[in-house]
Image (cartoon, rainbow, N blue to C red; front, side, top):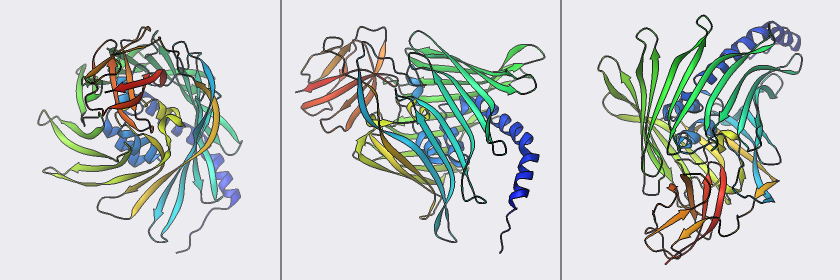
Amino acid sequence: MIQVFPSENNYINCSQLKLTMMKKVYTVIIISMMVICVSAQNSVNSWTGRIISRNLHNTVAYGNFMQGISDSHLSSSRFFGGNTVYDQKKMLAEMQKLDNMEYQEYNLGTSLWVNSYLDEFTYNANGHNTSNTYSDWSMFHNMYEPSFKEDYNYDASGNMTERLTSMWDSISSQWYSLAKSDYTYDNQGNPMVQYSYYWDESTMDWIAIGKEEYTYASNNLTLVISYIWNDFASEWMNSYKSEYMFNAGGYITTSTDYTWDFIGNVWKYESKTESSYNAGNQLIMDIMYSWSIAGSSWVNDAKDNYIYDADMNMTSVVYSIWNGSLWVDDGHDDYTYNNAYTYNELLMPWIFTQFENSRVITGHMITLSTGYDAGSSIPSNRTIFNYSSTTVTGIAEIPDGKVAVYPQPASVSVKFSWPANYQSLKLEVSDVSGNIISYQQVEKNRAVSVQDLSPGMYFYRLINNSNTFYTGKLLIN
């Protein structure tokens, strides 16, 4: 079969004719994603991860790899990153930054990998992700061409305050504004409200379209309500709601999503996810349900099983779907790592770092993700993660005395006490080789069991979201 491509002139003319429509379509898509951010970006529903992983170009990193970690950022007090550290001291630190992710699809006919999409990331001197640029592979030009991008702005504490989305116009070689989100925080750095806007070219102004409000309990995000703006009534209208339940370690066990019934003026069930963990608080299974109106009950929908290696890296996610009577294979994704670098030595885009306090404990640098369709041993897609070295402003260990750890050495349990106004922090414990042993939520002056640790020296890190609050040594006898 002979494949015919348009000429360069026709290509330009088509682009000119379609530019206005494309901008409208992209605006609708971006706004839709922002308005339903509860079920996409901020949702703890792993079914969303499947949708992202199966339908968007950033399949692995923004879907499959993250669907296992997308829930537990809600158990932290901030999930948009930050750089506030109690009594911090600055130092220069060399890190490995993720420069880009290249997504490819496997061509069975030629047995070759075919370029599809490219995501590129930039960072500032503090290590904050400042932009993500998404490009599509052009068969006509035999190169990647930009499609749209996001730019991120931060306040003095490192909280993301603005996310700008733009579309690339290949004719004028310019970026055009499409949408944006603004974020507000409480005095502990918890996101409280997200406002979403679209750019109106006729008025040259941002027009409000959506809003999300966040509610917390003991530093766990328990409720997110999404609204849409009603121009006729000049008021916010309910749209979507998510509720979350946690275990004693601060990890999500159940997430329930609702949609607003505008006729009945009530919230109606839509979907639910139940999550299971092993003794080390690693996520091992998600079961997704959908609500049956006819049966007034939850029905099985999909299931994900998470597999780890001895280095605590998530090496595989196995997908299953419910056929009405039993679970059937729906494919799997495998992940490859470079264990020379721990996750703490990496600079990752905000889409990753917002999930640092995650349910999945991935200890090292992910380098490759490979997807397989159901029943197939031949890969269907892959994502290549490319890194480079960089020097950023790092955080030195806080002087002794700022955090109390007792007793030292310990054999049964230890307690942590800190002076700042945080009821709970994340505790990461690693061995002398840098392998992460445990990762859990701890409360101030509450006993933490260490009976599973063998005698010896360990290193711990107390984390306020993506910020290292304190690091130190832990002795076990």
